[in-house]
Length: 119
Image (cartoon, rainbow, N blue to C red; front, top):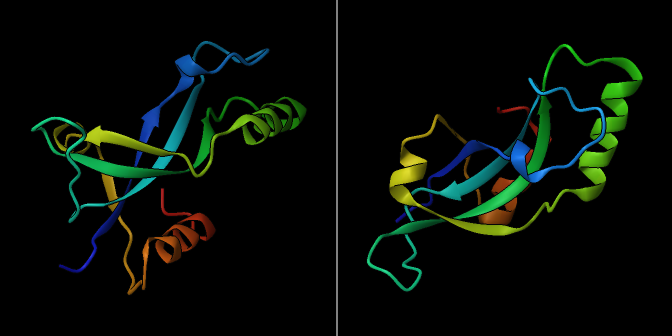
C-alpha cells in the first residue's frame, strides 16, 4: 500500500516552562505520520507512528524581541525528530492536513513538510 502522509498539531504548552509566556499563548507541536500504516504497541488498539517536525508559538499578540527570545528557547529545547505513538482514534479526531507528493520514503516527506508551510 502506498504511504499517505498527513500532518497534525498538538497543544504541548503544558510541557513547557518558558519565562514571560502569556497565559493565552499556545505552543503547538507539528507531527507527520503515515495514515496507511498502523502499529500495535503491546495492545490491540492500533496507533500511528508520528514524527515530530517542529514546534510553533501560536500567539499573534507577541512580537519583536519577546517573540524572538521565546522562539529561540523553543527551537533550542525542542525534541525534533522524536517518534511518538498516538492511538489512531485520537489522531483521526484531530484536524489533519495531507502532505501531497510522490515521496520515496518518510524522510523525504519530512524534509518536504519542514521546508513548506503546510500548517
